Length: 529
Image (cartoon, rainbow, N blue to C red):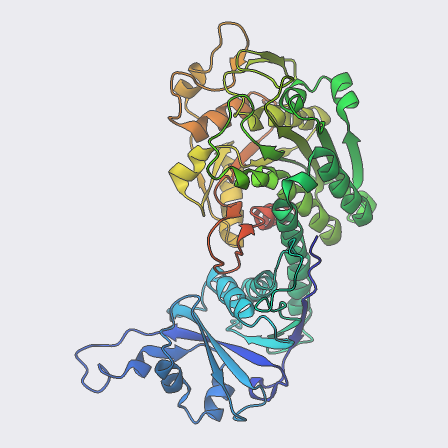
């Protein structure tokens, strides 16, 4: 797996005097009055340097925006323009990254800074040390801006090691070191934000690595071993249930899905105790559950072959939750966090579970199986019931559960369902992290259609078929949450995997969503409960 090697630091030297390989500045687009004859034909007048680039602009005798305009700069979000300085400043290269229109009376939104920093760092692959001199406001918004810049820079440097047997001449190594420019590099608050950004970026990178690993190398036993090893090294409590323990414990849903594969299923439990970590006091208990289907063929209800290779990412929920736990172990919040990761490989074979089967779940409910490709809810039902049995004040589950999420909300916005107040907190955490979610309902008519003639509930709503598919998943999972436990289900089928070209801080492959959302939620609970 990839071990993030890019280092992160703070610097407060005059940007024009920084001895780095490249210095990154922000560039805004600016609306020009077309009726003003003095400016309507001056494209350079449509560009505005962001705060932080003043000394560099002075070194260019005020002609920096004019030069960037000649190179085609527009200031559009994420646009990257490189300019050789030819000795004008200490750094040999100035890199202007677009931040969009100049905000009115405020710094750019953190997500714009996060994506801009990532775009610039990715464009500078091969450089040794670079400096990010993007705008950090001198007010209460400073920590959020600094966190965004640092996270974006590190995530822009992410690269999966891959499996190529020959060096690629055009594949330059990631930036080795990033220095973030601030007014005072010794400021404790700034240092804390940089430290947190490093922890978060490592967690996101670990999640991406697991998702990007070839599925023949990450079957349930090896995935469980990898997570358990990393968790033990981080100081977390670890419990791994193998197939015998799952049988003895009555985990019917996990076992049913795993029946068709020669690689047996697992349930991994990870625990963080703030008392052991030194946080002390009375704390809330948060349970995190993540779907870990290491490959999903659909089972007997087999999927179409087109695009099936992306089903290696069907364990992205478990990867995100495991990575979140590694970050929690470093950050040591005053919240007791326990993770449950059900892992199975959904394969068709003579031993696979079938449509028409009735499965007894961990909480005793009996489920009539109608579609073996709705396997995620089966393994999650067991894990969520176990989490409630162990005891928790909140339960948050995340999974690549339904194609309906992609149809309804696209590839960037996750769906969130469950208890209203907790869903709102998840949504707010996602907005802060730049991982948006949208609340979805759990209608009674969807549940009514899941009544079964032979069991307590059917696995899907046969009368609705694909209609409300995302909602069907949430309605089913609700059956395995104790009545008194606030809960939220985050469907990340789209946002967890990026199949297009790199953009912002997303590279092709696993994205690490929703690691940063979960960590923001942990912070929220620690601060406000």
